[in-house]
Image 1 (cartoon, rainbow, N blue to C red):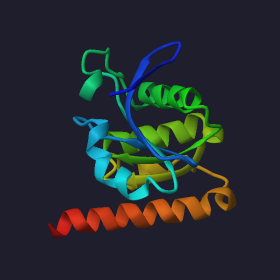
Image 2 (cartoon, rainbow, N blue to C red):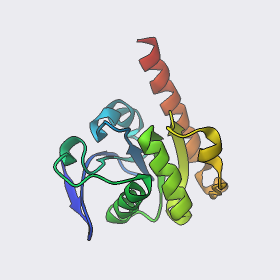
Image 3 (cartoon, rainbow, N blue to C red):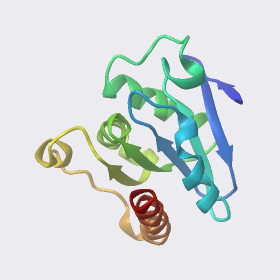
Length: 158
């Protein structure tokens, strides 16, 4: 698994494609490799990156993130490390909480947020409101959402 080094952490990740950056944030327990089927679907239009949160997957030996806020800083570092001004975030369970937290802390680096099975109740996820530049993100978000939906339907029907 490739790595990038930031001033605070080592990022271990799965990566494919070119285009707008999409960060796929796994649940806990979990690892970036669990996103491989979705990465394969979107590789032709996006720069797909699925990092392992510290303490999980190939980063199991690293000191784990202590909270979604701590993990959000890790993801913010990843966006910078990949040289992108912002990223689309797709988060599952703990990864969904991290995506919401990152959008709260650093809205300028988040293009869109897609939440799958968030751990928090809808009232906790939506308050305070997160405002993203919708016009900029709409086409990319629609493509990502369509592929996520298709992938989930395929998994459910299997």
